[in-house]
Amino acid sequence: MDILPLELGNTVGQKASDKCGVVALVEENGVEYRLIQSLRILQHRGQESAGISIYNGKDLKIYKGMGLVREVFSQIKIDQTGDRGIGHIRYSTAGSSIIDNAQPIFSRVGKYEIAIGHNGEIVNADEIRSELESKGYSFNTTSDTEVILRLLAINLARGEDPIDAMKLTFSRIRGAYSLVIMINERVFGVRDPNAIRPLVLGKTRMGYGIASENVVFEQLGGKTIRDFYPGEIIELTKDGYKSHRFGNASPAHCMFEYVYFARPDSTMDGRNVFEVRKKLGEILARESPANADIVIPVPDSGRSHALGYSLGSGIPFVEGLIKNRYVDRTFIMPTQNKREDELDIKLNPIKEVIQGKRVVLVDDSIVRGNTMRKIVGLLKNAGAREVHVRVGSPPIRYPCYLGIDMKTKEQFVAKDGKSMEQLAKEFGADSVAYISVDGLVEAIGLGKNELCLGCLTGKYPIPISNPNEANSV
Ligand code: SF4
Image (tube, rainbow, N blue to C red; front, side, top):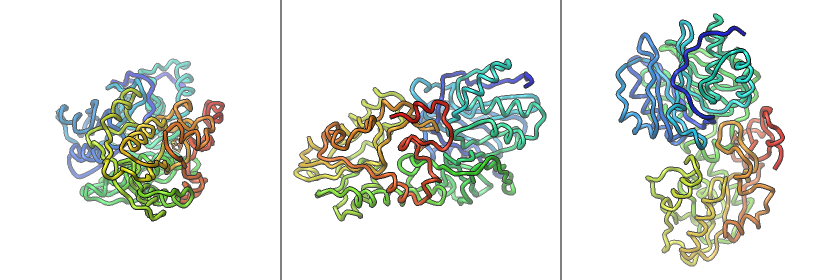
């Protein structure tokens, strides 16, 4: 492989494994404002940094910073305009919550300027990095997104057409990637051959767009065209779009998007997320009934599941926990200390609703268990006679290597095959039950072989570099 001069943007930082949101727009006039609005619509997918890149008719310009979208763009003056651009929001693993890891990231090679925003995680990034380093390339970051950027830049510098350069790049990488890419004035979206992370094509009022979730198009007055196919590159133009396929198409959509991460008003791969969550609750009620007086959701993520449990069981749904809306979601806070601190001020029980009642407490999922332990304690202190915990996903027992920040099995409260009785004791609850894997698959309504269930079963849709860790409990 030739050694080529690469100029990389400001991307120095630590290892990043992103669960993020991406957007791309090509419209009749300046897209900056609508890119920012789109990122605000996707804010639930990441709260640590936000950025956009626009093509001003000559160059790519990048604007990015740390914090919520509105915080970042109230501090940055956007001094250029362009009719096309991409955007990215991010949350990070612990220790990498720094500006240098904010995206889009940028590279210049020969006549090309490239900007990339990435949602997902590349499992063979270290292997490719070592190979390139042994050939004389150096990296500015440990980010897997930089590996994609480098490979793409190398292929472009060899004289490949951008589409061929992308196909060559993706033939080398393995993992989860939903990408938005600008190569000079050309705008692309890419979904990996397993379609692990969501990516949607849509029509906007003044052009065409790509986004992690279709709510972007619905809320901005446009309409959803369709989900990206597995292994698809779509180039946006002012008149429409062009599709190119690559890789072996075998979908393995992340079940966790349906269970927790996506917005309930999104529709992904033909399934409305709210309807899936309600169905999860109904099946949970069928599989694990409880003698109780009221069903209380863990707000906000357990609400749709709890509604389904109530409908399925006939037990009344009651809002018994009030959430402080101005405290961030605990799961995506970058450190355990921050998460614990946030919990203390996040939820408050309504004693008048709970006192003397047998409660079914429904949440979407349990990862570490600290939230559940605290909430059961809150309900018991508020006078609940019994608390029966019901969970809308099966126990998470294995790490995720494909873009969710669940990297070590030690963190999981359900590790080591713990029994439901042991978990009930840990939470201080009277009983605990999770939905089954078959129940989850039934609720999502896709085939078992069309879903990634890796963190539940230890069986991943693509080979993982460290299978010993992946396959041991
Ligand atoms: S391992 Fe779990 S969280 Fe990760 S992609 Fe698969 S289903 Fe989603």
